[in-house]
Length: 431
Image (cartoon, rainbow, N blue to C red):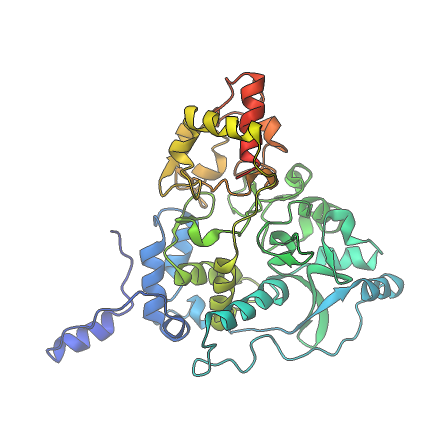
């Protein structure tokens, strides 16, 4: 196992000088340790990053939970800005006046939650985390602000509406003035069968690229999308490019339903997923912004967000079983699909080499986040998870299993006859 610098070295030397053995640091999931202990967070980071080679991993090893480094991310100011929903009524007011309204904001989310007064039950953590997912600002979104001032209904770009308010788009108290920000839910929420938004399925109708192209373009730096201006028109709905490598290698917005069962995080399998602490460190480093307006989020909120994400059930099947899906189950086994997508999770603890799968290798081999491998995604709910593959190359299962298609890779099932192919797809829609 590779190791980075040990932030406990100073304490270790003191203990040795006193003739004492250093106590072993427990890495069990521990909310209080995550919130208060730099050594705990550092140990989780070092344990769970799969490899130190990508620039993504190196940045975290260089700056996260470091000891005595003035450039370390722990030294950034903790910021918890208050937000309010962008209702359709307030959006109409913005369009009419061409300015954001003067608003009276509540206290920031999590105010008063201290290390000595943490939630005491998982239900309390999950409830707080759900609010973080929908309400806590991930980044400012000036392109959306310009669209609202121009009178645009954001539904034209795939933004969801629930209870007469945009999902994942918020007014934020930014140094005493209202600004527009996005939350996790803008990309990663959809409306469930109960009529409520949740993070089980991503919002793969959200066309972030077209919105940026129309109202932001090259002039706007975006915290959750690194697509260059020249490539924005290629992005399409439900995709973003999160790698700072000057190459076009988009990802489909991942669904979070069933994430607790996934042994790796991210399409490139760059994190071992061993519990709440893994995911808390992962999401905290997503939120950290060391740029022009440096800040880091409250760790209480990040642990809560991780608890919420891990509470989400897998996406439900699209169709009920029937005769065709029963035949398709046999095709699934005979074609060897079951070797990677192992029931009942229809996933695997293995990774698959980028070269073996044969799909577009750009993201998997990028110096930014590439590991040379892909994780094997779960197929639960796959019938409703279009577009397919890590980069959203196929809009339907039928397109993915069409013989002679131009998109390379993942050739499993392409040699089936039409009837077998239809049965296989019928089965996939029942998982």
